[in-house]
Length: 365
Image 1 (cartoon, rainbow, N blue to C red):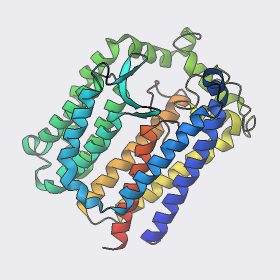
Image 2: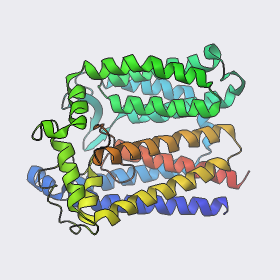
Image 3: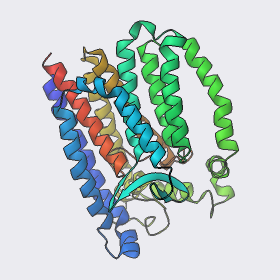
C-alpha cells in the first residue's frame, strides 16, 4: 500500500466519521435546542461553522511543510501559556458551571487548553528529535519537558480541567517512552503522581463524587449516578439494530450532554450495536492507517509528532467510549470527529491535517 493510498483512505475514514457525527449531533440535540433556543438546528448550525473553520485549518496544516513547526515549538508554548493565563481572568474568560475554560467571540468559543495540548505535542516532538542522545538522562533529557508540562498542567488545573491535564501528561509520557525514556524514570514518575492524583480527586468534592458514582451509580440514581445510569440505559435499549435514527428516548432530557460527552450512547440507542461497532471499526481503521504513516516516516520530528497526535485522538476516543459504557468515571472528553465540541473538534481536524502532511512528506522524501 503506497503512502498516497494511505492518505486517501485516512481522509475518507475521517470524512465518514465527521458525517456520522454531524447527523448524530442534529439527532441528539434538536429537541434540547428547540426547548432552549427555539431552533432545532441551533447546534447543527454551530457545528457546521466549526467544521468549516476546522476544515480550512486542516487544509492549511496539510499543505504547509510540517517541519516549519519545529521553529514554532517554543513560541507556541509561550502563546499557550499566555492564553491559559488570560482565560482565568474574570471578564475575559467565559465561566460555565464553575469552570473558566473558554474565550467567547460572538457565537464562536475557543478553549485554549486545546491549543496547549497541540503545542505540548509539537514541543515534545521537537525536543526528542533534537536531543535523542540525552533523553535517557533525567537532568537534560526529562526535566526540561517535565518543567514545561508542569506549568501547562497547573494552569489548566486552575480552570479547573483535570481530564485535559491527564490527557496531556499521558500523551507526553507515551512520546518520551517511545523516544527512549528509561523505564525506571517512568515508574518513578508514575509512583510520584499517585499522591498528587489522590489530592486532586479526594479533596475536590465533585471529583470525589464522580469516582463514587462510577463505583456504584445506583447508590444515588437521581443524583451523581444519573448520567452513568441513563447512558447505560440508552446503550442497552438500542439492542442490535437500534430504535431508529431520531427515535432516542434518552435524549428527551434524560441524558445530559447527549450531543457532546454521551453521543456514543445515543448512537447505541438509535443505531444499535451495529452502529456502535461501525464507529469503533472506523476508529480502529483510522488508528491502523495512522500507524502505517508513523511506520513509514523517516523524519524524527514527523515521527514523534504523528505519535503524539495519534495518541491524543486514541486516548480521547477510549475515555469517551469507556465513560459511555460505564467502564470509566466521567471525564468530559469528546468523541473525536463525532461529538459536538467546538475547539476540540477543530483541533482534531487539524491533527488529521498534520498526519496527512507527515504522510505526504513520506510519499515524496
